[in-house]
Image (cartoon, rainbow, N blue to C red; front, side, top):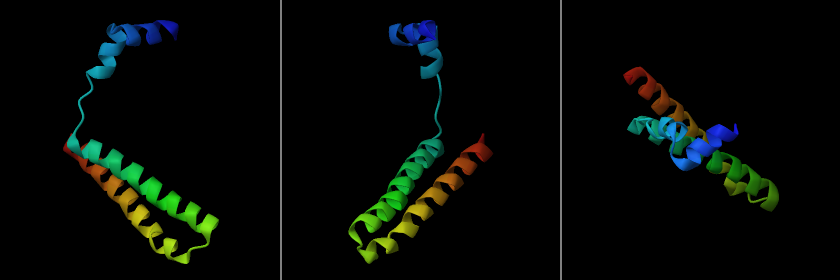
Length: 81
């Protein structure tokens, strides 16, 4: 493990393997949709439980939709490659 960490930090072969990964724009979009969906879904439920503001429950499905859209983008990226 120390060799891999040292190689990554020094720009050796282990670091080259990590930086040679190419990303499809759908993969990047899927990742951001996963992050947004998780924050909106979980965050709205968390704030709802802390504050008792019932209107936050209306925002929760938007996080679920973002998460589903992330899965569709990821499936599209897999289908394309």
